[in-house]
Amino acid sequence: MLLASVASAAPSTQIARSTSGPILALAADGDRAAFVVQGRFRQCMSVMVWQPTRRRIDALQLARACERNDRGGRTGAPSVALAGTRAAWRQVGGGNSLETILRSASLERRSPLFIGYGSATDGVGSFASRPVADGSLLAYTLDRRCDSHGDERGMPDAQCPPGLKTGDVVEATVWRLGGPLRCGGIVTVKTLTCSIVARANSELTVLAADAGRIVVRTADGVRVLSAAGKVIRDLPIRPLGAALSGDRLALRTDGYIEVYDLEGGELTLRRPVARDVRLQDLDRDILVTASSDKVTLRRLGNGRSITLRPGRTAYGQLEPSGLFTAGAHRVTFTPMRDVLRRLGG
Image (cartoon, rainbow, N blue to C red; front, side):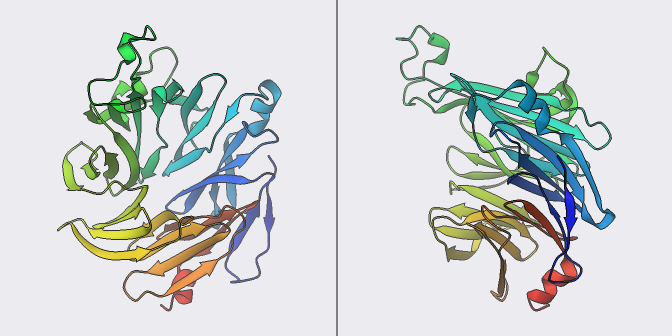
């Protein structure tokens, strides 16, 4: 995949790159961003890591290898996470069954390795969640979902327990990179080493990570865990998405963005939003959301906001170094000093 630097109109310190295909996912950590670029065929994608201040871009996976070998099957929205120099990404595909495949590679070792895998039919089977990351922490969930007619279909192992229905989670494990175990329990191919953070006989879907903590959606609400699995806070809200920064937890609920103080568990902000608004990130007191071709930054303290238009299906990630945005065929970095200036200091 060829990428070329492009000039930016404003501000002068903004840095941008164009891509050969649409950008499908974005993540950032420190002064780097990872993003997924669609290849010529929808099921093929490239995974890139970009360090704009050094004018450096590295490929961890290229779409052209897939384009040579596989042009058919299902497709789904990919996702990506970045922990320092290591990225992990989920690719959704398959034929008769839906496959969720997790791979990871780093700038030091760029050959991708499997770290998780799921295969399901009609909502029954195993699933791999999208990965989340921050700093040295990278986590994901592998779960198993049951079939209320498992006995009738000759699959007693898939039969739902009493009170559960087809597609309900009956077993979930949160994994993090680093530790004594083979990631995802994979034994048939080479993989990385991992640790188990938490297990449950119900949902434990990772949503966000920050400063050594992991946010998961549970059967009853949302839970914040330490990297070792200690429960830090439970809240009785089942969110669509989450972002974590320090003691602030932002949740995308039905019709609202809500912000909670983790220390006391209190709701500190509840703001109604349109149906298409997606929670992107939270960095200190700056909330990042996206909708259509727009990315919006809002200060929680004074309510000041700015809106940028990166292009269709916009994404935004905010780090202490600055703001990364992506949309259509372009990814952009704006230094934090310029973000703060536009937000009024």
